[in-house]
Length: 58
Image 1 (cartoon, rainbow, N blue to C red):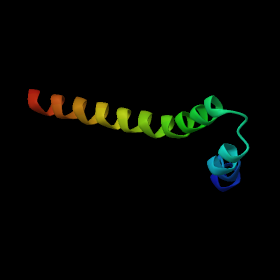
Image 2 (image 1 turned 90 degrees about the horizontal axis):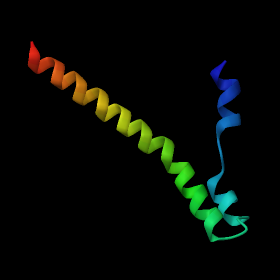
Image 3 (image 1 turned 135 degrees about the vertical axis):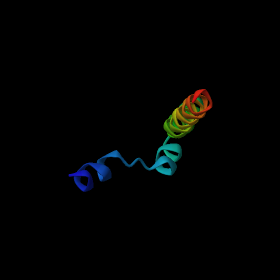
Image 4 (image 1 turned 180 degrees about the vertical axis):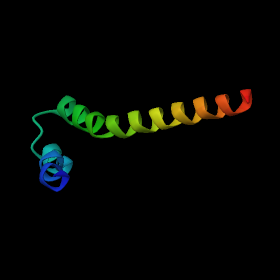
């Protein structure tokens, strides 16, 4: 099922930057493309921190 949805979620950032109407749109595209990665790293760090903290209590 995932192989059907994954191609729909892929975004060609280079193409969007090429046809961008102005610089603020380009900045939005760049931020929007990196934001999911940054959030994922933040959640992973939070989970690591919570697990490390719970390990110290035992």
